[in-house]
Image (cartoon, rainbow, N blue to C red):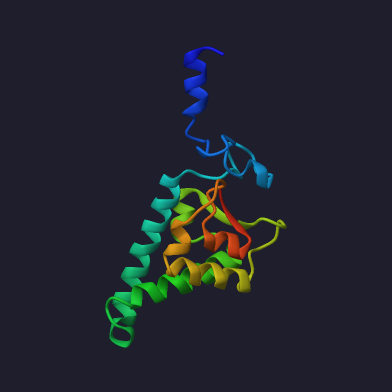
Length: 149
């Protein structure tokens, strides 16, 4: 294999940097396109949009009851729980072109898994510790994966 070919394969942005396999493939997901694991940019953009929406709602309607700084977090958790559990996406996910799906069956995430995922997401640490398939601990605990729509 030539040097340039080796370098290109080794620096493929779809690869995890560990075992060299494209994230999600070992979960049975496609390597690219719809249903594949998205890059970090899409995920960060989706979360940023969700945080802005939660902050606007929380500060406009719940700041007096929950406090100006805590209200957005409560709204974010409830928003993620309800939307991911029922339709598999949040406002931010939808705008970023991503969705959350179960790893074991092509059915909605459901309220129990959605609640576990949302609460762990709020704790932050589970969301920033991930595996080779770009699944945070919150996704692993809930049996979910973020995919491209």
